[in-house]
Image 1 (cartoon, rainbow, N blue to C red):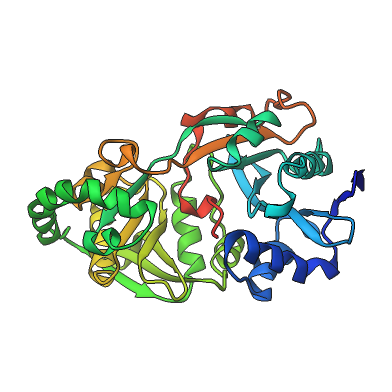
Image 2: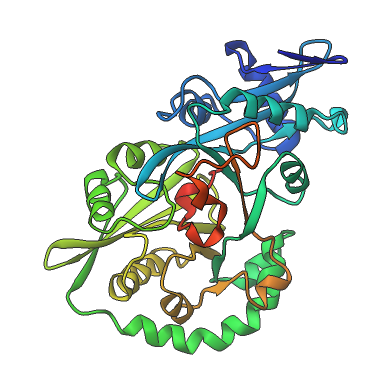
Length: 362
């Protein structure tokens, strides 16, 4: 335990759950359930214990939390444990007291030089400077592609995506003719089936048949079953088949009870060929016509994304208004420059090949 003035920083304990939830609602304005906490932290199959550091004030009240989301990564064909800082919270009344730094230092000390190989995460504009101060290297932007299906719906809301939709609306309108054309050109011999139950064997088989060369999370059966048990999200699974054999799959997710946007959470194989991608996108767009937008990762063929009306947030017009997803990394060592030879390639953005499956699901 680290004691600083009236604050203590320590590992999460079993009696801290309600305090964690209270702080979460105060900071994020959202309620969380026991089921969500168990899925993400208590029952995570890749790490022992609950990987959360908390800060308490002089009364023992939790006023800060620095959790990490444990994920396996494949780096140069070697499997390692990675930790993704997320759900970081400091109570508004206790900010500017160094709690973010102290909690993060305790996380680093807890995992330094054993168990985990590296940290990676996607800091926002509030946490980026703090991460860099503690040794994280911000590698660059991971693109996200947006297909705005009902721009007027976004324009009537007070959100960052509203601004993005506004500047993209004209470009989207100009692209509708091309989208309609692409929707009529179904690839021959490919059918798409849908299910609300995770087809773990199919997903794992598609992954094994075309393992990405870049850094990614292995999509084995254990990962597929655990990753999509998040009780706060709803998922649908699409499988493209040619002559009855799976040739591709896509996973679409959305927050339960929220119909504004859906995420094309994952695609298998990660570098899917154009024909299966077209078939899968046709099915997904048909099923989600009542949703305001679809978000897709950059691992899909850009030519196909463009044909279906997706716009990347690294190019105009979205680059002018979007909040970029920045990838930051750090070795799990006390020395932030102490990259081991086995994972040194993680310090280069072009070596990563990730979808939303590797990103924390809020």
